[in-house]
Length: 68
Image (cartoon, rainbow, N blue to C red; front, side, top):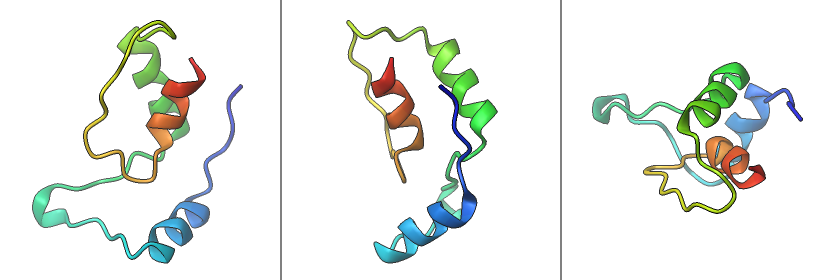
């Protein structure tokens, strides 16, 4: 099931935790729903496999991986 990821919700989540992207280090947060789903689909990860996500940020990709 696809859900719309609200940018304002993510901004609030990050701000409440004192997290800010540092572009100097190339930090960006993946928020585009289509790109997130495409990345999970392309990964081929199944429920019987483990995946290590480096720098999960607000967990948008993690959440989708856990649903698989």
